[in-house]
Length: 184
Image 1 (cartoon, rainbow, N blue to C red):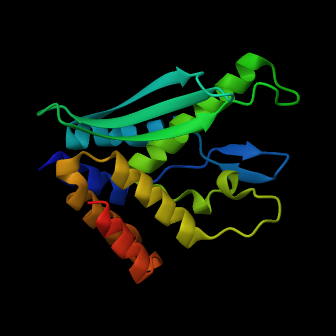
Image 2 (image 1 turned 135 degrees about the horizontal axis):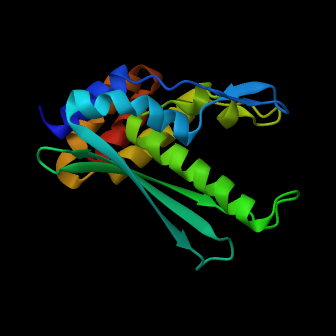
């Protein structure tokens, strides 16, 4: 089984519990730790492991944490990755600087893993807490799919596209499907 096939199976089988509760917003949400805990059974089953690396970029006016999530095949050492970029609001009211960086780091890890595993955060209240703005799940899944395709190795993009379409294709318009096809 190729790494792409293993990743596809994990994406289909994976369920991440929402074990955290936001008492202010009154909703349950999942954390990066919840996702990583949910992945542990797949490490042995598919002979893979997951790695998250972060880097800090202060070149812009807003500090940024870049998180890279990868699945690595233990037999071939091949890997597939996804990335998330999150700004650090060091002036966030009520947070000390370490808390602001920790919060941004947690979000970056969560979204990098979400991109890798095609977790649809449109169903996660943590992602949809938009203060009365209307959310569009079709657009969110499409944007996530674009990022996932962009992060895929060139020789794997067509396989990744097939995985995306098999999981989310019914949510996309024909124009969106054509746009994704152009990225391969």
